[in-house]
Amino acid sequence: MALIITDACINCDVCEPECPNGAISMGAEIYEIDPGKCTECVGHFDEPQCVVVCPVECIPKNPDYPETRDQLLAKFANLHPGKQPSDASAGQVD
Image (cartoon, rainbow, N blue to C red; front, side, top):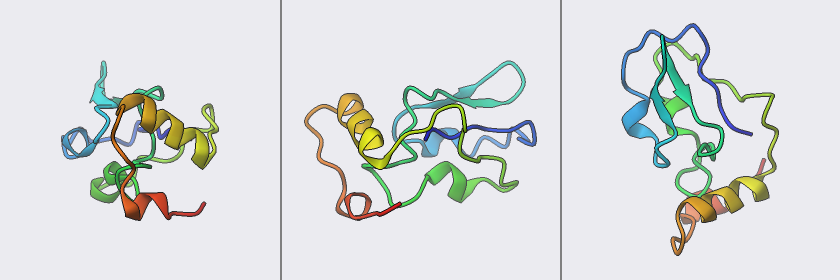
């Protein structure tokens, strides 16, 4: 499932550079996550890096985009052709 940034965002700028997929960008008022690029860091890390660094904990799962771990890995493969998922991420179980 892709993540979403809520209106509790304080525009602190720490999440955008942490996204390995380039899914986070500044929106009209707050940062936004492109659900087509968000893999919850599956394939890269064992937990979503934007969630790790967010000081106000405003990045929950987006209920409008339910995805299984296999779907997130497939999205990772499409976004990063030829790159293998990291060992830590590959072993993660939902």
